[in-house]
Image (cartoon, rainbow, N blue to C red; front, side, top):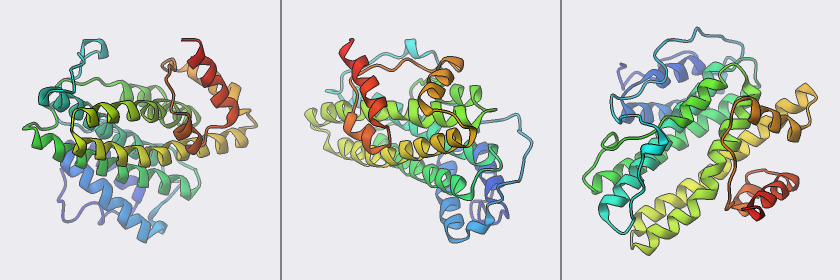
Length: 279
């Protein structure tokens, strides 16, 4: 789609560049360009034009022909005691990170008139998600597989579609709902990998969890910023948005320490503790 030597540095507008990268179909190029754009904009933040608006193309998000996208219920869990089972897990995690690149880039180009720091934050997130995808892809290759070899589901991008007209809903339901679930899921997955003797894969989970705490914190910060601007109490606003946009129901166990570090307040943690106790 683009000359890797010229893109995205040659683009004059960072938000336009984020849309171009979102449209990129090749995962390796998308990840490389996302990281390059963050480095370029970090050095020249004046390239961000918060007031620019762009017509939405019809080919979002750019993604390869594989993996085959199926209903979540059709994906079978496999034991992590086997190489085959761990390959399936690494592929599922790579798919999440690939989608996370798209979600961060989509927030940058789609939502205009936000403070410049909003765009810097989500460009940084896109670059870190690209790093995670690259780590997982390299590890998957050591198992003899590549991204696309196994089926996957499209739940993350489906939520992006539902919230495409509402930045408040996007902040509420992608970083602080869907991505926050990763904070809960990561420690038990890491433990099972370590128990299987796969310490290389477990170490990648450590990197992802560390960075995802920061990503959810960014989502929490901008959700509360938007609530303040609209005179909304964040707690009932979140409940309303979760119902309106059909967010998945939260289920424990919860990683309370990571969620606290990611900016959830004590009232939210108490509510989660109540869900945990009600199991």
